[in-house]
Length: 242
Length: 201
Image (cartoon, rainbow over all chains, first blue to last red; front, side, top):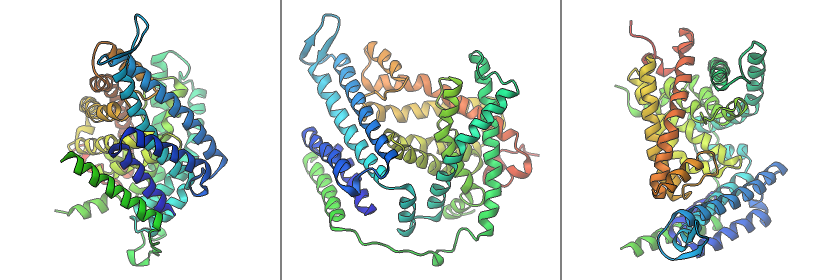
């Protein structure tokens, strides 16, 4: 199913550049509907749902900012609203709308994919699809380190503060503290990397390719349809430009 | 002369793999430090720069790309669009590190400024044409300022990048330089990029 979702993201990204804005608005709403109702595309946890809602608010704010700023600063064409000092131009509003619809369509597709696909499942999918072992292991190790690093940062921060680092002083003092916090963080990461590499080597990493288990899943009909849609959009765009 | 495939294998083996993962995690969590200290820099490519210096260009490009992909998965899909920028950061940093620039502080500062300019040149078209110059971040005020001077969206985004990126990248480079200088030689030599970091005897 992950392949279908990836095809969906590719389809939305192609649509964001190949299709007219009005059609993009339709696709954008379709993506919202998928994220809301279709189980396979729905955020997979309560935290993911919160992120999705937060993103929708962010997207709304960003769109409004893009439209207003462009309406204010693009001075060409017809003036839609004249408030004396401030003028809103039609061309600016149209440019802002085009940009924000494209952005929201592409971003929503990516977000719906990630929020409905646990990253560990994605790593398993990549591994079974034949992705290099380095890629999947870095992805999985990153997830582990991401859980631990905030705590380590907090420990270093507290320790440096206890030693008298000027973490709450003026700008120069705080700037110097930056070095005293990031230095130990980076050094400890490098040292742990060396230790981890020994552990990985002892476990026989990376396994020879013939020892890896690959269960390649055939593409589903929806995935094929989406890929065909991508090809059709690119073909249409090329036809139009010639 | 090793082939490209052999160089790639050398670059992404041994301690490089956990370090790349740490690089991804550092890129994503360093904002916690800068916001706690209330310092107006991002430093969100510090892990990429570290991997570029210690491992090599392709390991760094992968680190930066994965960090941006993971950031997208955590509710900030806009970062996906800047993958070409982080790839360029990795390639450029590894290039100058291989040429010994990370042996002296003045060269590191020059490298950071040049990196900032490259990042600005690459991110300006993305920022202008995909986001319309607005990212809902602190640097938007700079874009608005440059637009109010009569520049179009591309030039405003470029001027904004040229104003803020070199500072960010110089700080990133200096932190990595100072940290790597403090590494014991027995640890440093475990990484494929160590040869260009050690002073020639």
